[in-house]
Image (cartoon, rainbow, N blue to C red):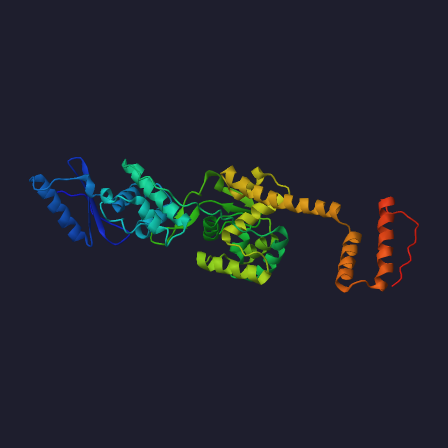
Length: 386
């Protein structure tokens, strides 16, 4: 009896999908032999009229498995890895029961939210939605919890020199410097693998990427994340050229790299950032130096102007607030007024101290003179008696 070829699922089970009477019939079993046996039995019973085939038996896991199998050849290994993670870790209470038998999908969402963040649940449901839409199945109507806006921390311009100094000699120093040039983690790994820091030409050739696959193994991608990602980035930090000219490049696991970034921030006494935060530091610095959004997009390989604009808006808001405070300080108080306020506070605390009166009088005269002569040019001499 001819049967479709059995496939091994990420969970370790074996899977066969047959079409009987125009209906997709999935079969899952712990071993390849058992999977083939069950599939052969179902097909034989169907052909002899002993079994009626209903699409009601398909599970949510079946839909996601089919979606993964269909798009594995065309999607990034890292994307497929994310789909597999959802298949194995999200919505497990209903993942392997007939999809049509689940009546309270909002309850499923609410239960998942007890142990998972709104962001995690939303991402998981996004995979479910994609798989169901692809299979032509109506997606259940559910409400998802609102996600808190999580901003990525980055280093302020004045913190960057402190970070660079603290990073010197670290085993992950080259990787940190590449991320400060605006490279993604996947691009950093590819640059190190390809040894593509050209010191003579003064460029970092960013082509391809290295990402983890569904088995958590790093694999090469011939293309970058977006069309704009393939680019030549000038070497802008002299220390990177120095290191690249004197040694071969070593790469480290993502967890090791992340830990070393955190340790370096702590050592430098600066804002605690992640690998991605170093990439955003590059964009923030570009704004502070007056570069256009377009220029930073091209150097950093951003394809979506919306992402770049959000970073710029955030930094611009910070700078705007600082400017407003500076102007308010200028008009709201002068050093003389601040001194008078401090002396008044002292007088209030200690009562009427006769010795302080000449001091107050002297400052009042200076203040009045400054108001009368804004340029500060006055020949008035104020006796200061303490």
